[in-house]
Length: 347
Image 1 (cartoon, rainbow, N blue to C red):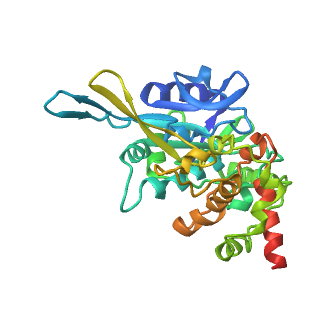
Image 2 (cartoon, one colour):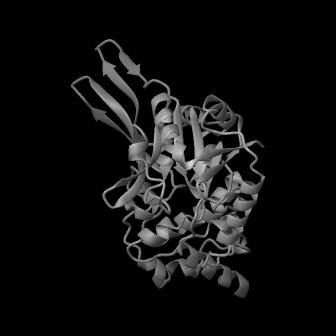
């Protein structure tokens, strides 16, 4: 694996060039929130941030997305699909959010049923990750197989070290981009920077305060669907607001509806939805298989630490801690995992 160096003073030049040559998505500050948006250059980009309030999953699964337009002429129905995805660079995403994109891949690029809208964006995107420099009290990525400096899923990973960024070239996409901007990605002896990165990763690994252990939890869920735990007081606090699903980088529930734009024209729209809403599983005949908060809470957490693991051999949580921060009634996935572990140990 090749490595390069970018001086901090050249980051603005790099971002300006990327914005000219690609659709560039990067972290920005919008009033009190940090989120990812398309930017026109370096002046809009925020690199000094812990983690964004909203993950960059919208780069691959937009909050609202037109899948096609239709026109009825009286004799026929004309369907027009949007053009394929443009060349895009996602810049400055943290390792947990990049790993979350990997949880999307088997869902939307399945062998039997692929999603052309997702696949087009994924194929035409380059991901430039940014290692963390701080661990928040709500972080637990280590417990989900990640880490603050993890390269998994990135095409390039930048790690801030002093007045430089140590750049790890991980994929062919990353190599092609480095070659195209070789005047910025300098070839230097990076042996010391590699050691500095390892030291940073070691330092950050000691800053996690949340102790989370998944051992035995999935096995408990495999054999105990009707655990009394799901009817406990902590779970009854849920107000079905759905904020946990919207800020979660791995949640991908969506709804589809037709929006009429005229007497004989319209658009089919895909938009984010939430399994925490009572209406999400409401069937046309009136039956709802998840009628109460108990069933919805159970489904959410079983999806994170059992169902996704069963289907794709990867946990459906990356330990970003956003749901812990944003939940208005303080439902905490790490507490639930630890509670279930205790139930498993006492079973």
